[in-house]
Image: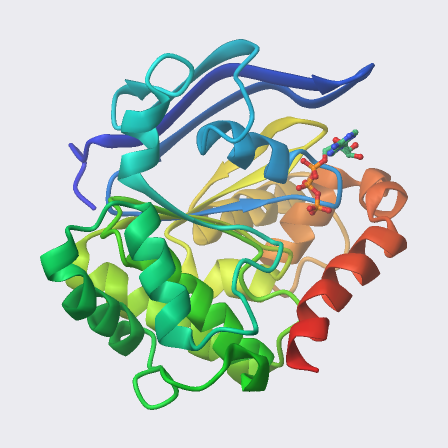
Length: 282
Ligand SMILES: Nc1ncnc2c1ncn2[C@@H]1O[C@H](COP(=O)(O)OP(=O)(O)OP(=O)(O)O)[C@@H](O)[C@H]1O
């Protein structure tokens, strides 16, 4: 990413309420073209709601969301054409083959008919599913399903890929596989990636910058190293005990979310979304 990279996503004062609850509460966020940006936060921080506004699946009642300069409220189709979205929920059909699933997305996203077969093949190859492409998805492992969903989102060659907890419920090897394929596609295309994750180690390793979200807005923003160093410097200045080892991103996260982290990390929600993914494996 260069200093003058274009802005892929700009949110200004984005607010979205469910009843009396402001799920997103004055969110200001800029994602630069070409970066991998991690949106982190405890359960209920507002990450999914914010992402759904960016993808135009929810309206933008207050504030502004722009995707490559297009207003998500006024120009929804232009925004949709620019992005690929992998939601938390299962988006692949177990009764179809991998290739049929990706072909369906190619049709929905108006990939020209003449190019479709080639583009479907390329998307499957990009996520390492060429050999399994003609098997029913019901026989795939959880990691393969996630990679297939990635292929579905990639078939339209999006400039911006948005992934909502792409690795939740996967084993460490499958998690690494998903990230490696995201990294390879990004390196090949220069695509911008916006991802939410609960896994601090993944954010640390794979994201260029992260934003820590809590109670609907960004509370800390920077590269993982900047955030860790910032907390370390503050602790040293305060003469805090236990400053021998540098803080991890998880320490930064706990510092921001504080006790709210424990309060809000609804076990039921966690279990439910983990199971949602795990169910794909069975
Ligand atoms: N459809 C809905 N109806 C009512 N409240 C909702 C709805 N969806 C989300 N909320 C509430 O909005 C707040 C933000 O939820 P959201 O799912 O955006 O958070 P999140 O950071 O994505 O959490 P998670 O990490 O668990 O996915 C929470 O208080 C949640 O209970």
